[in-house]
Length: 226
Image (cartoon, rainbow, N blue to C red; front, side, top):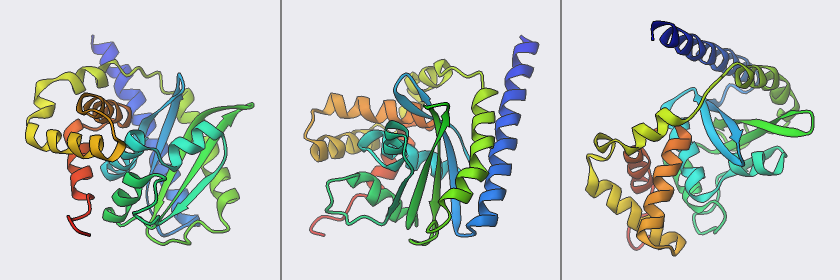
């Protein structure tokens, strides 16, 4: 058991080191970059492997609920840049609201390929709308080696995340979760059970709690009549 713990700790330290070095290099190129995350493509789904801040992980989770540039980049294998989107746009509606609340003006998602196969994606969040303009190639070079190295050295499964998401303590604030479920159900025209499942699954994939996702969704929800 001690050896298992040490092996797990070693992997976590490697990931922390990789994301720290990646963040330092990215900010040398784009000082306005606020946060970044590294996503792993696993069986057709993107999971947040490691994130620099909790806010970045939660923004990833919102994308897993309703779509966003990270998902588009890993699915399409192309660099995806997005600035502030009008909140009445149907494309990435919940994500556009969430990034506004978080103070994010632009995102850049870079797919990392091994051969011709996308293995992961790097998501960058910046405070200015033009922060990434003209820097795509430099950022891809800066992130590519670190990202692939982190994924290669991360012998991870998501069993522990699934167990954590199923724990009753995660959903202590049931009213908050229920309200977010109703919001997603109404927005996507789906039933409440499906909406609740989407929120829980998104939380698992992003490595945060369902309550975190619910709180952020409700905080970014437009006021009635706006």
